[in-house]
Length: 126
Image (cartoon, rainbow, N blue to C red; front, side, top):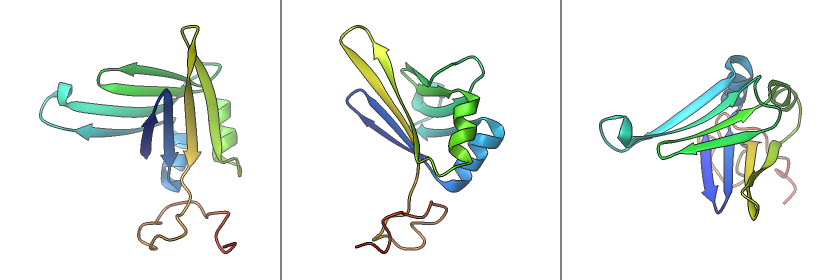
């Protein structure tokens, strides 16, 4: 699972097996370890949760948790839908953009680099 952070934007890109795991187990997690101990580990988690009615994110100093309604995960995982997108209001002046996407093959990458990705809809159109 790839994570991209930009000003008030969180973007996850999942490979085929991760989309399948997310749909099956309702959770996908990755971590970055920069030393020993929990305070040196950063986790990013996608979770399907019955308790949410829309996509929501919770950020802590050591994690990002994005929760998605189960029906949105099922619809996305079992269709050609590319992504799930949401805006979460942050105070009154701005919002946090949340995007969860299927990871497409790069047109100029090797087969090894494109392993487990979704077919790129632009492939062969250049």
